Image (cartoon, rainbow over all chains, first blue to last red; front, side):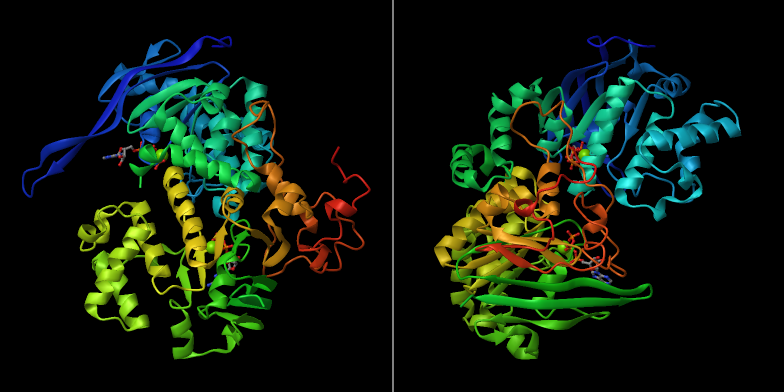
Length: 290
Length: 334
Ligand SMILES: Nc1ncnc2c1ncn2[C@@H]1O[C@H](COP(=O)(O)OP(=O)(O)OP(=O)(O)O)[C@@H](O)[C@H]1O
Ligand SMILES: Nc1ncnc2c1ncn2[C@@H]1O[C@H](COP(=O)(O)OP(=O)(O)OP(=O)(O)O)[C@@H](O)[C@H]1O
Ligand SMILES: [Mg+2]
Ligand SMILES: [Mg+2]
């Protein structure tokens, strides 16, 4: 269903995910909860990128998993294309997944080592019973070409490829069903800078070409900045600030986002002193995260 | 005289597929009290360079050539006890490998005092007193009460501070830190980098910081060494390297970096470097970067290796087509 830019494609409201902490030898009992995601709300409009940034353990991945229904939220609502995903059954979710795909961080772990590149890329078509063997093979070749991968490699196995190449395979697979939203969870954090740039450019190109929306999750603030129209900063399970990328980065309002931005190393040695002085201003917030 | 002068270092690994030329002719010097950043992408030989200097290369690896003169002595020729004594005493180290970090079964205090007693022959009491001072120096709150904690009670950032405390405990002249902040959150990283900066000036200690992050070297180092495929491709002061990068690889690397500040970031594209680093078993005959270089010629670059040469005072580059000597436009770049 083509949606026009501007309409919210994904609406997340008051999302919570609490993990129980259990203790006990014979009988487990829940002694407390980890509030991994604690009342989070955000929207992603068609064709745009919302960047979700924050430090380790802030709840980014858990939020992404709850959107994808790979984890069942403790409470809250996830509306995708107007459908409430949290109340949906397996069969319904399967249909939704055509429109809602994911690219993971680790290009090594996320591809089945025993499947050929062609089978990996076209598996979503098989699962959804689309086309026959030959047409699926053709689709796989096309998808590989779209992500700048040599389609002749279709019969090879993932271990024969580098990290950046594997990430392309993962992206090709995510594109197979023509989704409108892709959740990208740290898609480039395992990659070197020069390869990272290739993948980020590819994601930008695909967005321009197919009108994709991204929920782009990463801990690297520069990477998130380059990809995002809007940015949400997470800290300890909460979104502490959300807004247009320019505004959040040039004029952060929340003390934690200020400290976070002051801590980013800037590749300009002339600003070393100024940056150090800037960080000292946020010492109180930073001291908490020693 | 420089504090450390590494010359023509070669370290190879014998593997079933062939010999890996991990470090292939690395030379550099570092002066007292300065900070040198070694930067480059994964597998370019940063860690192997450091391990070679410290005599820590194990089979199937071997230092096949070169010297590393530290305060008048070639570390590569020293053996056993003499080397042991320099290591951890005159040269402090922080390793990239998490296996060599803190021992989970010993208290923080025990791990710090162990080094002090071994290298400086301190008594138990002296060492304990000094350990508390060291923890204070790396800004661990309530140092004296935290001394008897086990590592698991410390956060990642605090553990890295303890590693630094141990590495500087014998007042080394040189500290080598291999990716000291890579596993840390950015706010924690900032604290650790600021701490290294502070310690360097207070102790007049030279520091070699190894990282893959251009931002990290820019915020810490006086001098920067860029490595590619086992070789030094550029070496300059931090200012000159960022203001006027010469090597096509350094230029591309800087342009490939996403920025946090500026305009038009969202709509812009990053510069990407086509291809990937070469196989170090069978590296390109000529310039190692030639297969990915926009300026490489077929005749010279592909055949003959360029030397590392001083293009202006203090700025060294290993390329036939450094930025300041270029007239022609690159092939395929507008
Ligand atoms: N299955 C689980 N059981 C218990 N706690 C969990 C589980 N998954 C995540 N957590 C906790 O929830 C919190 C948020 O984790 P999450 O993985 O979402 O963080 P993140 O922001 O993605 O971090 P990172 O940048 O390290 O990937 C953390 O404290 C984590 O330990
Ligand atoms: N034990 C070994 N056997 C074979 N090859 C090795 C061995 N140790 C290192 N190498 C090779 O030597 C090269 C340099 O490795 P090194 O660890 O120095 O890289 P690095 O620059 O520190 O990378 P990173 O940023 O990933 O830490 C790599 O190509 C690596 O594969
Ligand atoms: Mg995560
Ligand atoms: Mg290394």
